[in-house]
Amino acid sequence: MRAPSPFPPVTPAGHLWRTALVLALSAMAWSALAGWQWSHARWWFYTDLGIGAAALGLTFFRRRFPVSVGAVTAAANTVSATAGGPATLALMSISTRRRWAEIVPVAALSVAAGTVVERFGPGSAADWRGTLAIVIAVVGVTVGWGLYIGSRRELLATLRDRAERAESEQELRAARARETERTRIAREMHDVLAHRISLLTLHAGALAYRTDLDSDQVRRNAELIQQTAQSALTELRDVLGVLRDPGGADAPELPQPDAADLPALIAETRAAGVHIDYTDRCADAALPVATGRTVYRIVQEGLTNARKHAADTRVTVTLTGAPGDGLELTIANPLRVGAVPPRARPGGGFGLVGAAERVALAGGTLSHRITPDDRFEVRAWLPWPT
Image (cartoon, rainbow, N blue to C red; front, top):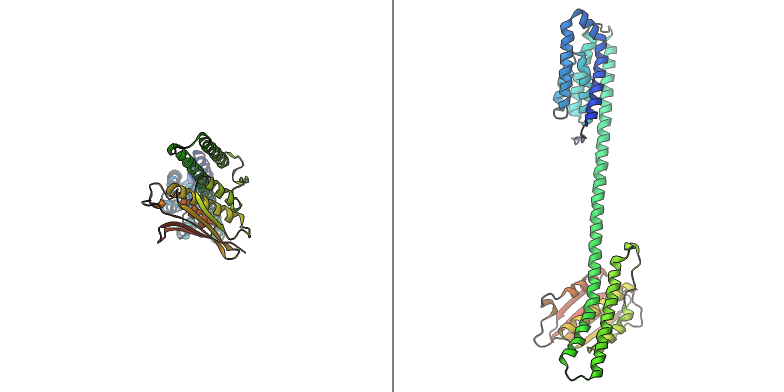
């Protein structure tokens, strides 16, 4: 069964012009009969008016009881010419619902009522076939116009629903894009600040606990702290600049570090006092930019974790692989005696979660574990196309 067409609310102006149209149709149908009724059966004159007025009142309930109102007004049209207008409006209202199980019986009753009036009423035509053809034509035009109105209403309702759904989906996509951008910026801020602040902590700790440093060593450590803080502020300004950039998503991103910047990162970390064994067995081949950026962030996170949890151990960073085989990155350091793994520390492990997300987006895998010889190891594999 076809779903009912949505009925738009009828304004007072809509009620007014519908009532005027019904009165005009009733006047046209009654004009040929009113004079005869007044001269020969005045009781019928007033009865016709009364039945027509009642039928007009019923049309205001046609949306709540469409079939009942249509059938009653059509039946009333057999004895009242003024009920023809309300019957036409009720039939058209039923037709807008586009339910043939409702349209056909009421239309047939309307044809029968119109035929009775024209065939047996005063001044009726002798050829009842011509009368029947005229009545069928009028009823057919009424039903057809009602079907058109119902179809148009349904089309407008469908277009309105699609527009509202598209607007909701657009808002959802915008919210999802904002959430993705926030996550990306938060990840960049974590990668940048965690690395720099860990260096600051290391240098400041040296000044706090080393009482045997001379003035030159203190000055050098203070200069390192100043340089690291300035670098952190610069990188933080670059990341936050994305939030203030009016260019939006179409604006080009600022240059980000990649695999070519790994030697500088290793040197900077060594200058902070961390012992690192760095081996790059794929230096002769150029990594893709996106892959190199992911490698840089993973190494940065691994060195940050080593400074946090095992500052006095030796960190091993190894890069192996070749185009077509993939790139394998290993970062490992011995556990300090009594140390708690990063994943088990309160608030820890978020950097590894961000690194895992980066690797997953690049199509690779990342894992971390405690090896049998008590070493904390981070191992990542990234695709390296030929």
